[in-house]
Length: 165
Image (tube, rainbow, N blue to C red; front, top):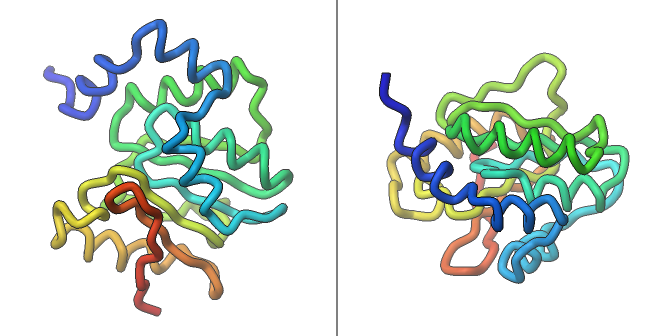
């Protein structure tokens, strides 16, 4: 049984040096600027699409306190790394990870409506795959709170994505 392209890509990235950096809680300057640009405040519920090893999710969980942070990714290897690193750091109970592709995501009954949904380098949402992007945005509109917003990194900047209501 062959592994997915997403898993093979993550396995190349999950080197000891990379894992040590992630476990130290260090965010790259690019990711830090993205997290800094999100409208975060205590108690929010946040969904990251394509969370990879979960570095942004862990930083957001630190910043929002007792809210809810969910990171999803299509790569089982990335989600496994996110869970391992988060457990090693003693991540809070309101930080969770789920192995699922954005186009297949459906909220579980225990998931709150999300105040912030964001994606970094997700081809379906940054314009590289527009048809898939439209489908995902329409699916994610169903999980946004009434005042929730969706943000996508495009060319190094975080931009708000119009969501059909």
